[in-house]
Image (cartoon, rainbow, N blue to C red; front, side, top):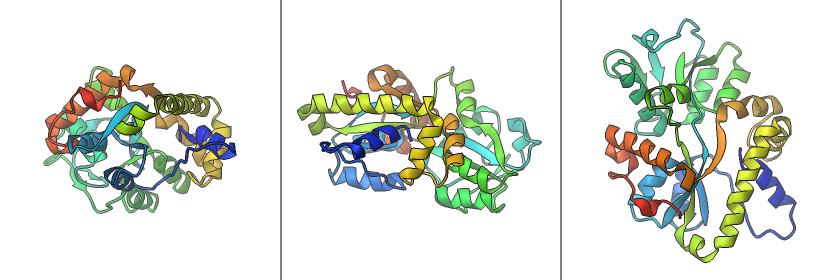
Length: 281
C-alpha cells in the first residue's frame, strides 16, 4: 500500500526497467527469493531472518510497515486482557507472526495461552479468517489490515477491540513492531547502488504521499486491485502504520523485535539472531 504511488509512476513511465509484482501470500515471495528470481522483496521481517539464516543472499534495506494487527470482534464489553479469560480466539496459523505475537502479549498481560483462553486455528490463512469474522463464524480473531477494513465493511457489527500494535509498545518500552521488511539481493545491491538508492527514495516518497493523500491513494489501491473499493482503502491507511525507515535508522528496533521472537521460539527467526551482515550498510 505504501508503494502504490511509486507503482503508478512506474506504470506511467515509458522508460522504466523496474517491474513490481504483487502476490497474495508471503510464501510466494519466499519461493522467488529461494530461486534467486527477484532483486528486491517485501515480506514479514521474521521470514526475512529465516531466509538469511538459511544462507539466502538477501539483506534488509528498510522497514516500510510498523504493525497492522488487531483483535477484532463484536463483544464491546472487552476492554482489557482480563476480559479475554475463557474466550475462544481465532488465529490464522501456528508459528506465524500474528499467532506468536498474540501469545506473547497474552503472557505479558498474565493470561495463559494454554489455560485462560481457547486458541482456535480452524481458518488457516488470513483471507479465510477474515471471511469467517465477516460471516460471524469467528467471534474473536486476530487479523491484519487491510483485512480489518474489509471485514468492518462487510459486517458493521465487527470492530477493533484491541490495537495490538499499541499493546506491543506498552510492554516493550515503546519499541514499535518492525513487522515488514524490504529485502534486497546482495549482488543487486553491490552492482547497482545508484538504482537501489533511487528505488528506496521513491518508496519512501510514495509512503509519505499515501499518508498525506489518503483519498487519492485509495483510488490507486482500487486501480491496481489492492483493495476492492475506495471506502476500504481510505479507512485502512491510518491503521496500517505505514512509515518508511531506512535500516540504518531502524536497525535497533529490528534487532530487538527479532530477539523477542527468538526468545519465544528460535525457529521463528531461523534458530539464531541474524548477524550484522543481515543489514544493508
